[in-house]
Length: 214
Image (cartoon, rainbow, N blue to C red; front, top):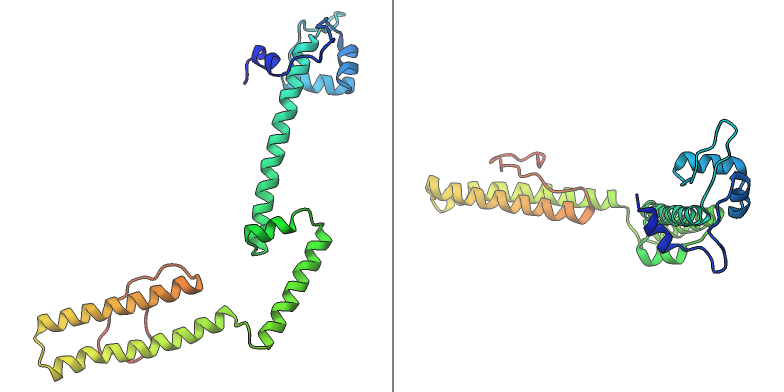
């Protein structure tokens, strides 16, 4: 918590206002709030000169209370601004906007956002029907089919080279490791392109002509 003396230096009383002790009703009028708000602020830490009770009134320093409230309001504004930024960033993520698009859309009402989202959906559907856009799932399936064929080819390559060039076990193992690496790199490139995460290395199973198993 910032020291009260520091708060008074940061937020001095307006010029011409004297720091004269006030009771609860007077400080409420000075700060333009209700008596109940003063009670709530006291519970939240607003400084008092003298505690009230048993027929004795509270006493407040206008300078202390003014500085405390200004500091409190500044903190509330900063917290709201941070929350607004987080909300905008989260909304941008949900709506798949980049920062430039988000800035252009700032301040839109919920109805306007819904209308914009609907228009964007209709545009993308029309573009898909024209063949200008392709769904990620379809692209993924295409690449999966290509990788299946690639795996079949590269799997038989090891056996072919072993027989055709009379490779010894050490040479065969080196070629097999090389082919394993090619498969893993191909899978990794696909995963990065379609956003499914990193590839997991899977050893090449020689003679496997079926599914990739990657």
